[in-house]
Image (cartoon, rainbow, N blue to C red; front, side):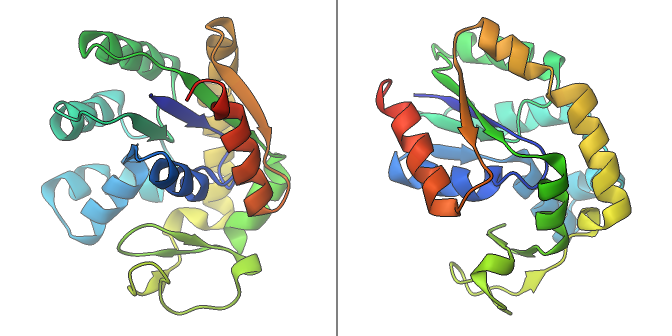
Length: 211
């Protein structure tokens, strides 16, 4: 099974993707997490994408696709795509890649959340500098990641002025994918404006018919 998660910044894609991928024994592909780790480690790839990430801009399509092919070309398990695709071009390229690898996209999970609530969540968010786990206000004040013990940080792209740019990029480039996946018959809409566990339960129920 292969799944795409779509939602505005702050909708909980990363948090839910980690839970669901573990529950279903899937590979979690999050370009954002990978790119931010590369930036922290000051690798060549990190240097290529640092300015785009810090400025709230989308990383060029060819870089994301190269990442997918290089790291997951030989993957045998189902893949949960978190925050990818983000453009129509990426969606078509993903379809081509899946077909070439004998795979099918089974579902596109849309975590529906008002942009204002997404922005509020990001303002209160800290993330693990190592594994990317997110920690919001509802999880209490923490200095270290409960999953791996690494220090929590504030991402530079969570600044209010950058969040506005990210929301605009989502609205202009990613939101149109809802029509694309609806037309393909794989879109599943989830109300993300509720407690984390309730969202997880709804996603599991939505996927139950295709597992």
